[in-house]
Image 1 (cartoon, rainbow, N blue to C red):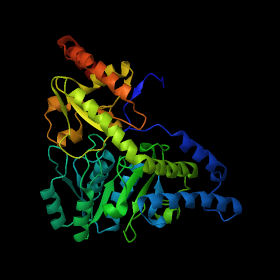
Image 2: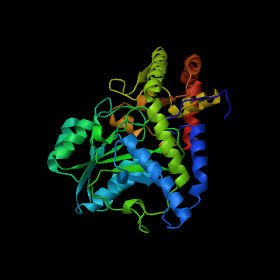
Image 3: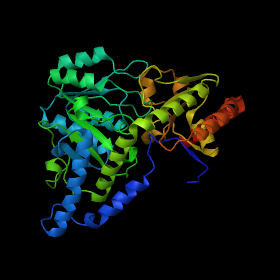
Length: 394
């Protein structure tokens, strides 16, 4: 990537840290072997796996046998929902919030097609789960409730500890998608009180294609796949050792750097939002709730987000129109729709997501460029052109 470009899409993925690459390189020699083998080479590979599992468990405040390695956040979410509900009685109720990642929402939908009873909990204007609806779900009984720790589009932080405590009182399994959290919030499973927690390494400086699911001891879970007894029987298949070693290193680095980095990035995000508010007809989505310090979701009335995203990209600034997994869609975000945003706001939403490497000069440059880009795109001729291009791309 050209060094002059500005990367503000860290919620989609983060750059792989050089010290994580080094940790993966150090593990590579022993990672060539199968940790399930009983010979000396296999035992060395098992040592790499055990070390990574112990280090991750220490960060999460978990027991080592509560850590299950997966291919990433999507698999972890699917294993949490489908694995838990299939271990319960057929026809059981399963619920999640309306602002979950599609990995959770689509898994819920699939369970509904498989004979289970799905429920989607509404949220308020800031994206916080509706507590009355949550209480009704508790009282009506459910096998599982899933509410994400922090939203990937708005950064809004849910009161997971309180929700999990309420679920526990009703003997309902509670899962949280914490994929966006580790760099900014402590993923302490004891403090959160959750039964299941999903992480993905590439969201905090680790490699792509590896993640984990924390499974509290005693939580019933059926594997999604057949074919082996790896990962305590929860996830068969030979483990990706080098990537797992990289995830352990990345999680430790994110944890140790969190206090200083979070405050510095929060100040940069606040400066960005202050500048955005000087542009006419701009609103910050989720701004009335606690949020991650690095995410700013802003709506520009009268614009299509795709047009502004392209204009920013041509200006050397990488941002997103929302979730990276759905950014090809021209439809308003399901997260913003659930928050009750009118289409004129939802269609013009852009997510700026900062990272530890984001610099003050980059934020100032973005604020210098944005007013002119927005004004140009709001001209009738530009709006018509972008609308035509959008229909053609669809």
